[in-house]
Image (cartoon, rainbow, N blue to C red; front, side, top):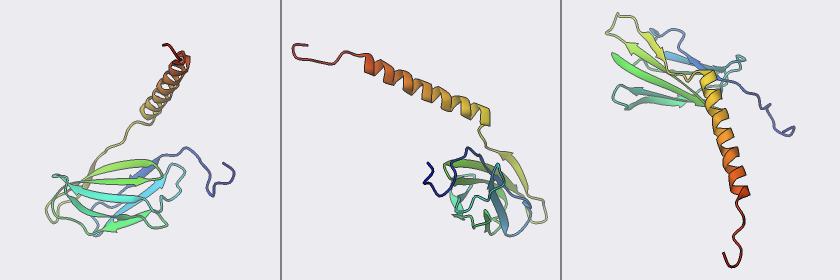
Length: 138
């Protein structure tokens, strides 16, 4: 671990759209410790699931795309094994755009699911190791 170029710390990715009405729309991605999520993959899809725009964040964790037409869009940011998603609703020209929901798994629920998975795999490993080896004549 000491040879890794960056520390392996547990952190959560968060995405934000500081000004949903702006054109272009600016997505800002960072981790809990406010470290920019540089190189994070960003995908914007419309209500039908069609990709409208995609790209990667710069060294400041920022990525911009032209403001799309009226509708509901999902913006997914993925980086360093983490993911965050935001729903953005854009109205007719002159109507404010708004972030309608954050599509995040609760941190404690995610931790509980991860621990349950690790415990399950550990129990499976122990059970498989207890089985007697298949020998000749069995």
